[in-house]
Amino acid sequence: MAPSKEDRVDQTLGITIESLATDTVCVTLSGELDFARAYTFDEEMRRLESQRPDSIVLDLRKLNFLDSAGLGRVLAVQRRAKRDGRRLVVVRGCRAVERLFALTALDTRLDMVSDPRAVLPSPA
Image (tube, rainbow, N blue to C red; front, side, top):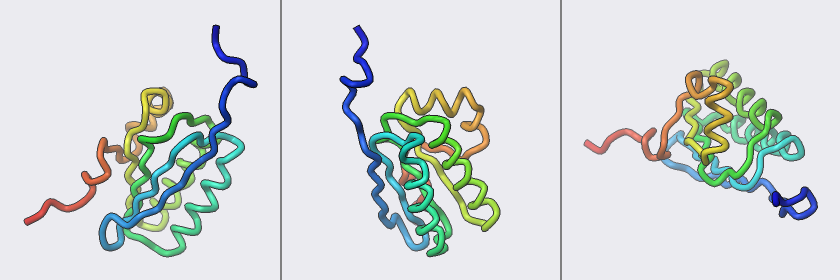
C-alpha cells in the first residue's frame, strides 16, 4: 500500500552554493523543490545572480521531487540568465526529475550535463 500524505516525511529544500571556478558557481539542491519552496529558491537565485557570476551550474542530483512550481522557477532562472548573458547549466537529477524535464521538452531547451565538472575547461 502506498504511504498516505500523513506518512510521508516532509522534506525541506536544501540549497548549497559553492564556487567551482572563477565566475562559475554551483547551486546544489536537495530535498523537494515544490510550490511551498519555489519562491525561497527564487529569492536565493536572485541574490546569487546579483553577484553577476558568468556561469551558474544548477545541480539537481540530490533533488527528490520537483513540481510545476519548482520547474517554473528553474525556467525563470534560465530566462534571466539568457537576458543577462549568463550561462546556466543544469546537472541531471533522479529519474522522476529527469522525466519531468523530458515530458516538458525542457531537456532540449536547457544546457544539461551529468556532472558539474563538465562545465569546467579541460586542463591544458
